[in-house]
Length: 326
Image (cartoon, rainbow, N blue to C red; front, top):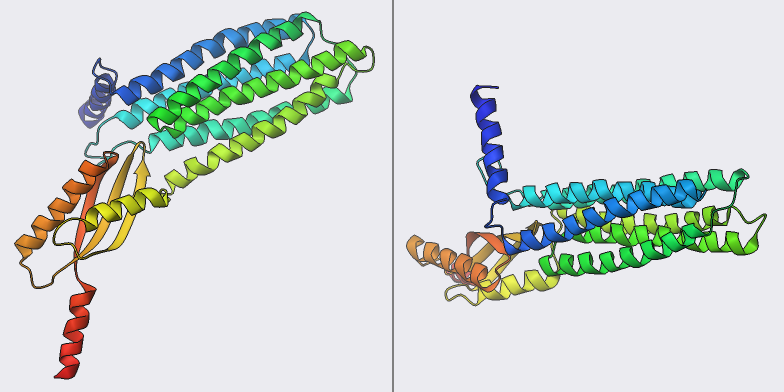
C-alpha cells in the first residue's frame, strides 16, 4: 500500500493512537470504562449461560445466552463509536466525528429489535414441540445473572447520563434487556419446575413476553439516535438559552433565527442576528465575534457558532415609513 492510500491509513492510525493516548478526555475515559466493564461481564455471563442452558436442558437459557452474544457485539460497536466520535476534526470531516455515536446507538438499537425477533421465533418453536423440562440449577444461574445485569444496567446508565452519550445509554439498556430476558426465563423455569409434566414450555412463553419488552426498548432508543442523525433540533431549553445569550450582547437588537444541531456531545449553532444597518462592517464583524465567544463561554457544549448579520427589522420599518412620508 503506497501513495495516498498509505498516507490515509497512517493518518487514520495516528488519529486512533492520539485518541487512545493517556490524555484521553474525561468523558471518553468514563464512557470507555463503562463499556469495557459491560463487555467483560457479558463475556463471563454468556459462557455461564451457554453451559448451564445446554447441561440443564433450558431452551430459554440458551436463547438468553445468544442474546448476550449480541450484547458483546453491541459493546464492541459502542466502543468503536466512542473512539471515532472523539477523534478531532480533520480535512475530510471539518465538523468532527461526533455522528459516530448516534450511528453506534442506531446499530445497537437495531440489534435489540433483531434479538427480540429471534427470541420470539425460537420460543414459538419451543412451545410447538414437546421437550424435556429444565434442570433446577438453571434457576439459580438465572437469579445470579438477573442481579448482576440489573446492577450493570444501573452503573452504565448513570455513566451515560453523566457524559451525555446516546451510544452508552443504548448499551446500558441492552444490559437491562438482557436482565429482562433472564428474569423471564427464570419465571418460566420456576413455573415449569413447580407445574411438572405439561409445563415444560413455560419458559418459552415467558421468553415471548420478554421479547416484546426488548423490542419496545429497541424502538424507544432507535428514535433519538435517528433524530440526531437527521439533525433534529435539541430541546427548547437549549435553543432558548442560546438565544438569550446572543441577545444579551451589546449591539444585537434581535435574534432572527437560531438553528442548532447535535453531534456527539457537542452542538453546532447557526445564528441570524439583527443589528443597526447604519453601523460599519467592522463594528458588525466585531459583534458577530462577541456573540460567538459569549455563546461558547456560557454554554460549553457548543462547539462552534456561525453568525450571519442582518439589518434590524425595526430600522427597515422606519426607513419604509420615511420613504412613504416623502
